[in-house]
Amino acid sequence: MQSLLSQRVAELVTNGWEPVTTTDNTASLTGRRPFAWWLFLIVIFLFPLFGGLLYLIFWIATSKATVFLRLDGEEVLVAGDEWLINLQEAQREAYVERQRQIKEKGFLHVMWPQLVVSLLLIAFWIYLLKTYW
Figure 1 (cartoon, rainbow, N blue to C red):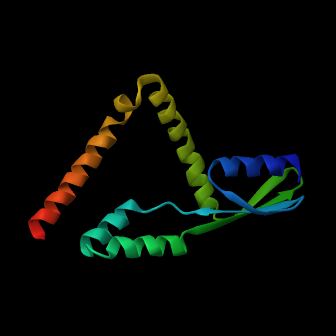
Figure 2: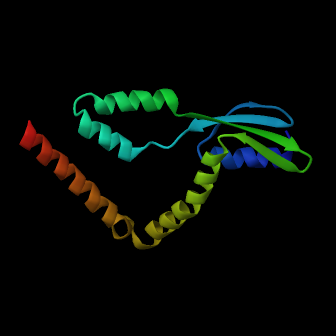
Figure 3: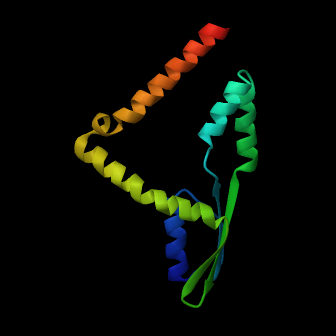
């Protein structure tokens, strides 16, 4: 495998992709599409007992993403679910920045807004379950 292609494959592996096949000039990798939390919450709200389980089964069955890489001269061409790679690379900068802030300032100082929202959502669901069940 050429060094340019192997470097690109290594970048994708750090983003969570798994190599399936590799040759000297090509590679294919698989991964998963992002989990749609908003859709999951809507399904749980509409179908409280089995909706979440059905959505999880649906996501596992349909979320497989595949990317094909091909070396063309001095350029690596990407085919397949390229939008997912672009999304991961765009979010990578924010992820690295958040990790840096957590390391410098501490977990609670950086993540308290997400923790408060999570606790409020859990309290809201408990309230709904107690009220309507």
